[in-house]
Amino acid sequence: MTTMTETNVATQVHRVYIKATPEAIWDAITKPEWSRRYGYGGSVEFELRPGGAYRTHASEEFVARGAPEIVLDGQVLEADPPRRLVQTWRMLMDPELAAEGFTRLTYEIEPSETGVTRLTVTHDLSGAPRLASLVAGEHEGQGAGGGWSWVLSGLKTLLETGAPLDR
Amino acid sequence: MTDDDRVFKALADPTRRSLLDQLFVRDGRTLTELESGLEMTRFGVAKHLRVLEDAGLVVVRRSGREKLHFLNAVPIRLVHDRWIDKYTERQLSALANLKHELEGTA
Image (cartoon, rainbow over all chains, first blue to last red; front, side, top):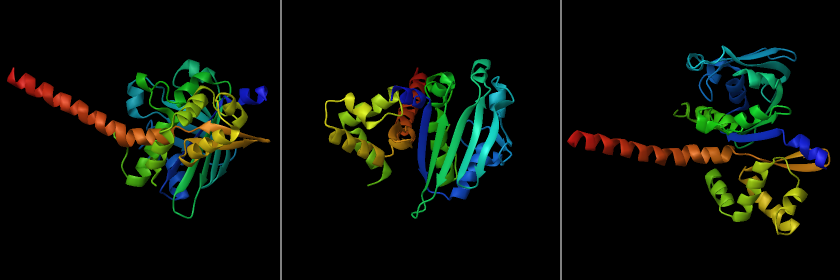
């Protein structure tokens, strides 16, 4: 049982209910014209097939503050639009984060009869403790943004109101 | 009951807040593990976990034969973005106005 828990420490589960279709949510995750409008505002680039490349280009604002042009990279492992996306995900913001290597991200999009769609993001952060605290939002006070909960709150606001969160 | 109602109701109980704190320290725990940190019956803890799950604050995932409980902070974030930001911003702008007025009359 103790060995079991050790591995779970590294997993984070973030879930949000959004009044939007699974297709709209899929697009908001995988298309740059949407990804620019919430969270960290980067432009995603996905080859949506197993083995396809994934990259996020930093926003101009981020580059101006010293971020590398490509802030995230990885590979698509599964793409089943608009239900399930599994990918590897590596943060390139600074050399220490980059050195933690690839983590694994699973997006699950589940519709319901009421028109509310459930989005669950499961992030396996084994071997990436610094990235884990960053995506948990623990460095928000230092201007690093609020991690997944902040990103998903912004995604919900954008899809439900058509306007980005104020910040 | 709205989503916000469920979150506020879930947070309005010390045992449930303590369960969230336990998961914050170490995520992905079984009922047995969570129960050992509290002076309460297994049934009582399970009931509290269900309220947290209904509010979306805890997400249950199966891993083999075990049911693991994960903290989900998104509903707290939504309450924060909806309620806290709004009022703290107003306070800040009130202060800014006050500063403006004081400086104008100085």
